[in-house]
Image (cartoon, rainbow, N blue to C red):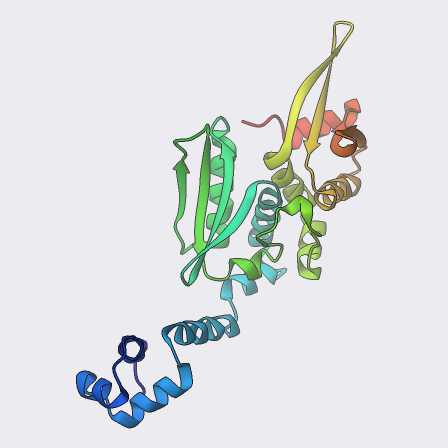
Length: 262
């Protein structure tokens, strides 16, 4: 007879409380041999938890399979956008056996918040996407729970993005090359802006992208190249942090497909 997770958990809880195997068998009504096997296999509650987590990771994630399938056009477009906005303003936090994707966005951009939530919902139609308004500042967090986020967004790490190497997996690279505009939009909605550069009374609108990670800036510039957009760099604090798009035809194109952040 296969014992349930809860029964194994109960055995190990009693074991860690100091009961011996015979006492555990008597208290739980589980044969002593089964109690002995459970303690031998897992050793502790943490051992049981680790085993469950390894088993979960060995099971293919159907969401990841959907994302990687090139026939799922809408899903891959949504993923390209989510990846872009995640690289700028997102992070993954673990809570027990699940992971929280949290994307911080200014509350002055309700349309971006809605678009971010909508694309996350396309990726995980059965999961709830929540928007929490911060009491400490003028921003919200768009949050979605899924146990396989580190496999979906493989750039996850506890270290700040600008202090480490950021590279795309081969399957991610194929998606952003196929849906470059969606990826560009996600990056721009996280760390971009459109502003007026007034010279001698004439307004020269420009698009700007600012990020301290050289790898994320490189991805933005590569996206510009694929879209045929001319870009220039600017030094700040002794480092290149800003990318500008200033040519009138490029600004006009972005106005037609992206537009100011709202």
